[in-house]
Image (cartoon, rainbow, N blue to C red; front, side, top):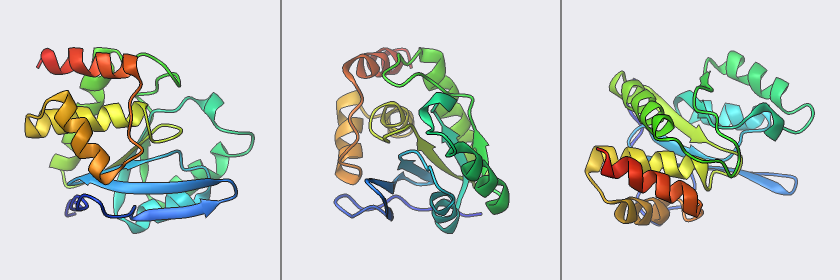
Length: 176
């Protein structure tokens, strides 16, 4: 399979599905790497499949799903053949241990190296997952934390890791 190319800066999300009071959005932030918020309906998973996503790195804990949300999403992953990896779960507002950033970037890089497109999400697609995507940009492109986050925001303007997540990202980048 071919990696999906990154979107040009300033372009709208490639996935934008209004669902009640929340939207499900997806942005191709790097080749083979999409940043999304929590897919909470089968339609969201189907949209990921239509975009060519093969693997979803889910950073959410089970308690972040509302009653009845998780089961249809799991069924949709099975029906579409999208693999879900939950090895990098971290509490909402939680600290990003350096090992988590190592594991997440390694999983993404290995998947992309084998031609698989990856979507990374936390609940809002703003903080935890944005820090992981920034780490991938730092690792691949040799960017500083500031430059990686600036670049990320040109494609996904909502991306804004919390202060403690940014600190962990800076420690991680300094250890490379």
